[in-house]
Image (cartoon, rainbow, N blue to C red; front, top):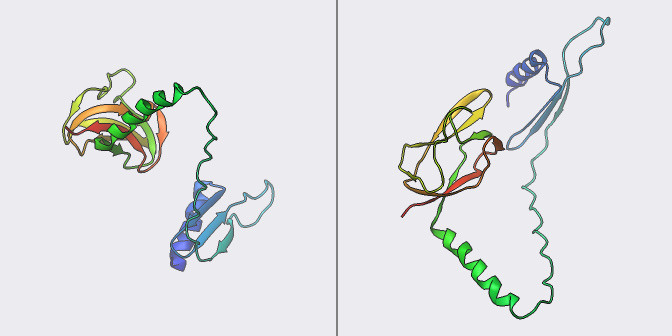
Length: 172
């Protein structure tokens, strides 16, 4: 990042009234902290800047989830668990439709309108399947696959992350 870009960023942070911004790029990390001057004091309204340039370490691996030890049960419980595993294998042919951005997921265009699609509805490429609101902009999300919606993985009016699965589609 060039020095002029850093200075522009500092000015932007000062004008925006944000108290802290942290940017991490390939080989550096910058933290800008802004303290507003006390009322009555004269002086610079420039934010206090803390710039740290460190090599970014490889992403930390998350620990594997802890699985509870099986509890001794009657022999009848073991066969019952086998059919429950079968539907999990059936999802291998399903396609996950993922969020293209960070925002709030909505299944309907507005609160007084019907949902775009329901479970069991057929969709084709280009159909609008949901809306994701980001910074007061409502972005219509079009399907990139054709098939039948099997399951919604996200509740209406909830925050979503980039690349988070939104729903499952059976392409057959």
